[in-house]
View 1 (spheres, rainbow, N blue to C red):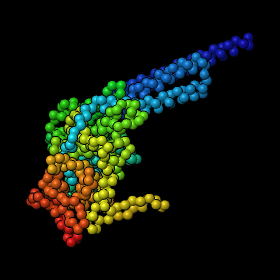
View 2 (view 1 turned 135 degrees about the vertical axis):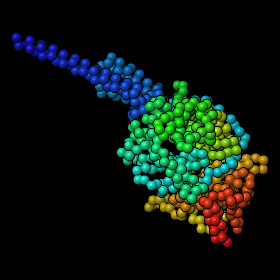
View 3 (view 1 turned 180 degrees about the vertical axis):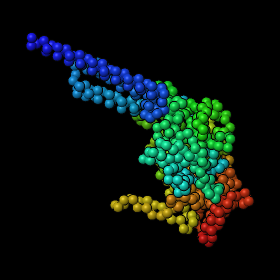
View 4 (view 1 turned 45 degrees about the horizontal axis):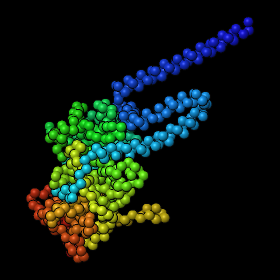
Amino acid sequence: MVRKPARKLRGDLVTGVTLKGKGCLWVLGGLALLLVLWAVVLPGLWPMGWFLYSVYSNPIGWLLPLVMVGLLVALGTRLKLRVKAFGMLAGAVLMPLWVMWTIISGAIMMRGLYERTVYEPVAALAPLTESRAVSYAEARENFRNQNPDTRFAPGDLDYVNGHWVAEFGPNGGFDLLNKLIYPSQGFFLYNPAEVDKVQIVRQEMPFAEDGLLWNSVAFFVQQHDPFVEFHEVLYVQDGQGGYMAMVSLIKRSGWARVPYVAEIGLIHADGRAEWLTPAQAQADARLEGVQIEPEWLAAMKTEAYGWRNGIWAGMITRQGRVSVQQSSINDENSAPYHLVSAEGMMWYTPFGPLNKDSLKGIMMEASSVIDGPVYVWELAGDQAYQGVDALATEIKAAPNHPADVNWLRVSQGEAGEVRSGDTDVIELLPAPRQEDGRVVLYFTGFVAIDPPTRTRFYVIINAETREVLQDVYSVADVNAWLRGELTLGVQSRGQGAAAVGSGVNLEEMSEAELLDLLEAVVEELRRR
C-alpha cells in the first residue's frame, strides 16, 4: 500500500519531463519559424542581413563547425562523455579548424580573384590631363568647419565628377536617435572655383548612410538582395535636375567566393530604385565618368596580383606578394586614386612589395568599365622607387620654397609626441606626364597650413630622379604643366618660383583662381 503512490509519483515525474521536453521542442520550433519569417520578410534588418550575407559569403566557414559538432555529439554520446569533457573536446577540435580555414580561405579567394582578373603589362603609364584641385584633407576640414546644423555631419568623402562630395546626414557615434529618425538630407559639395567653396545640396534620401536599422542604406539595399555587399555610396545627377545615390553591389562566385560587381543600384529621393546590370550601367549616360567599378575592388585586384605565383608561394614564402602603397602622407586618402587621364577616368593604384615602403609599380583600370583589363606598369628587375613618405622628405628639403614656410615636424620624446611647424605636405598623388617622347612618373603634392583648410601651393617631384620642380600656385598651372603647355625648372638655390598664370587666360578664370594668383604674386614679392 505504501509503494503504490511512489510508483505513481515516478510516473508523474516521467510524464512531467516528457511534457517539458515537448514544450522545449515547441519553443524551438516557434523560434525557427520566426527566424524563417524574419529572413523572408525583413532580410535587410540587422542582424539578419549580416547573418545571411555572412553565411552566403563564407558557407564553408559556417558548414564545417556544424558538421564537426554533429560528429562530436555522435562520438560523445557513444563514449558517454560528460558535458565538460565534451566541451573541451569540441574546443580542441573546432578552434584550430576555424582558425585554419580563416587563414586558408583568404588566400584561396585572392588567388581566385587573380585568375578571374585580366592583367595586361604595359610599358608606359597613361598620362594625366588634369589634377585634382584640392586634397581630401582640405575638403574634409571645410565640410566640418562650415556645417550649419548640429544634427548632421559629413559622411565618407568620395571624388565624383571632379569634386569631393560627402553625405549631409545624421551624426555618427552615439547619436542614436538622430541616426534612427533622420535620413540623409543631401550632401556636401566642395567646389574650389566658387567664392563659397562649400555647398550643401539639399535633397532628402530614403535612408542615411550611417543610419540605424530600417533607416540605414544597408537595410535598403539588402531588402533588395540580402546576398550583396557594397562599400561606397556616390551621389550623381539623375538627368532631371536632381541627384540620386549610386551603389555598386558586389556578390561572390565559386567555392573560393571571388568578389565581382553584379549590379549597379540607382536610388532616387522618392525611394524608387533602378537595378542595372553592368552592361546597362556602362551604357547609361548618367554614369559617364563615374566609378561604377568600386575603389574597394580596384584595391583588391592590386593585392590579388601578389598571388600570381600560387597559394603556397603567397602564404609560405610570400614570393611576389604586393600591397597597395600606404603612407603617413596619404593616410586618410589612400590609393586607389580616381584621376583624369588621357584615356578617361581611371583608377591609379601605386603598389610595392608586401610590408615595404618602396614603389614597385602602378595598376591602372578604367573606372567606368566593369571587369575591364587591369594595366600593370611595373619597374623591371631589381629597380624600385622611393615611397611617398621619402618623396615628401625630399620636397621639404628642396631649397626654393617660400621663405616663411615652417615645415611641420613630429618627433617622439620622453614627454610624448612633440610637434613643431605649421605647414605640411598633405597629399601626394601620382602624376604621369608625357614629355620627350615618353611618359615620366611625377607626384603632385598639396601643401597647406595645418589644419588644412586651404591649399597654399602645389609641388611636383620626379619619382625617378627625386628632383623637385618649382612651386606652383594655381591648379590651372598644374594642369597646363601636365598637358605640356607650361615648363617648370628644377628647384635650385636663388631660383624663383614658377611664373604664376603662365599660359592662362585671366578672363576665363574664376574669382577664387584670381585670388590664388594674387596671393602667389604677394609671395613672390616677399621673396624679393
